[in-house]
Length: 469
Image (cartoon, rainbow, N blue to C red; front, side):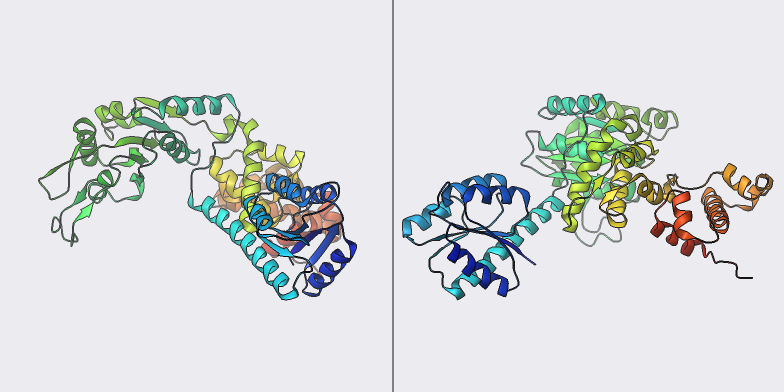
């Protein structure tokens, strides 16, 4: 249900508008002056405002101007008993969606309100789509390592220097590459990305340099490669440590001579490309093992930007988590949830094997599965079991005690992997506590410090049933 605000100093007008709009199933609030109206706009998320122009204390034009600063996407319909073309034009210039005269025509009013709400929805949807389409997010964090990375980007981006970005999976290498491009003199030209690990070795050369028709069996037409597509812009070679040696040789030539040849072609094509590369591998070790060319390494590694593991900058986790909360809740069209202090501390304590990418997934999971305030219990319950971060699982010591002895240690070989053992341990622990409390779920949930709904989920997951014998 759309929420509307009426700001008008005439009680009769407010009552009439409210009656009409509530009859159309709108949620309506009204106020008799602009100052209080602005305060309500600050506190409440209205979908549309109907505002009189001539009012005491603060006129409608001033209310419109200040509201535009607070919430620029909020549709305003201006109302006046002294309407002129000039007034309507001035209101439109200041951001009003439309202008209607007093006394308002019923049909005109309802159509205008409906159109204003549609426009507001379209603006919101457009912003969401633009954010989804643009992958260039802010580099979040204020730790010393992140501050140095931001400073390096500012210095290096405007130059033509090649950059090698290193760091673990999920640490944000692609994001750094995008900012290097966005802040460069090539920002108006394309940024072309190639994931070298995702392309079979026999196709990587065709992907990078293109091919001529008939150059191999499936080459039914000429293809332009990524180097040509990136001409004038930036080519980002992600996971370059997985590139084949033959492709490495051709990339080295392209960097040295600024020329390429398509597979199956003889013509040399000049290319003006800035190359950025990224890897999660130790390239010096790859060179020792004969998997990577030293001369290419030195060509690429003019500037090195290393991204630290998330566990090395845990002070940044609250900032990153809050940003993810706001963006994900916005995408889902729901109120922004909060994480309490103990919940945030629990997040900071996790090992984060998947780095920032894993944190994003974790926040999305918490938003979907938790209540309004995300607690330590939520973090414990919903930590990713596949990534070794299920800190809610019972320990072997607890299980041994619950089983009445240390016989558990002699049966470790019966488990195929760590996850099987954790599931078994968790199941036995919960079963023991439930039986101890005579299957009182509420009491058991309080005792083991998890939400009752989570305990029910565990009971269902492990197929636990009360022994009625």
